[in-house]
Length: 76
Length: 357
Image (cartoon, rainbow over all chains, first blue to last red):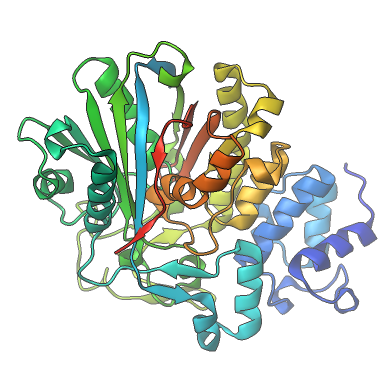
């Protein structure tokens, strides 16, 4: 179990994908975010490793349906 | 594989780029302006050089080799072996190295070998050259590394089109009697064919020969089109692999060389130039300063086998001025999967500015 505040997580997500924070919540479907392509994914996974010290496997990130799924993978 | 080779040094390095370029901003109409800005901001790549149809990897390497030999005032007949490291040979057969032997005017007593590798190719080239010299088989080995990877890229596959560029290089490795560190080169090489399908051209050779079907491009993932004869890269997997394997490799090389972290930081760590965020991320992970880890993708992109020598050719003036070259670490990683590195003294190496063809 990794303790990461949801706000910190969302902030990192919007920062790395360069999207407005107001536009996203944990329940936002990733399919609705055009910036969530392979480049965005790579940047975000790198940032997670750097900021939280957690390496999220690419396969898992690909399976995520919502931003909340990513958060769950990171924190469990 | 881990071993310290000795008895040779790198005399000179030259790189050649095709003159024609594609600026990423030219692709804005196709991909959208915001998307292109985002790609440039992340990858640091503003343009790539693309060889015209009549220019092959071997032509780029030949131009670099001709320029290098004349700068070193060395007759081609003095060279004992030519290694051509590329994923884009002139033909399926004969070996392109044989054509280069003839075109460069090397002796008929010379050895000519093709080696099929990409982003780790340069390390393999130096490793093989070092072995040929250390065994006494050769005194001078010309390492030609380059790709015209644009030939394998589908124009509608954004994932690779905005990253990869064409380039060639030539490096002369020579025997030396020096017994100090200038003649010593620790090498580490790794292979994991289990990851082969993450970076490959699936069809067009013997496993899946060309057919009407293999040549047809289809949409593979959102908006990216390619055929089975085009280059495929799973960027996520390659990224994961690089982040996992490169930092420990660099650390191990420094230990073999007995260079402290501070010494490495005062030297030059030349990583394969995949793109800016990858190199920058690896640099931060290794806790090295930006000045020690050059990023030279802006004008050329990822040039595969030529990436490491081209980076040296693009940045040598600053590296020399800051006296970094006496401790130079080189590290390549990619197709195979394969990864490896070496480290040594390039302070006495003639490194030339890139030339255009």
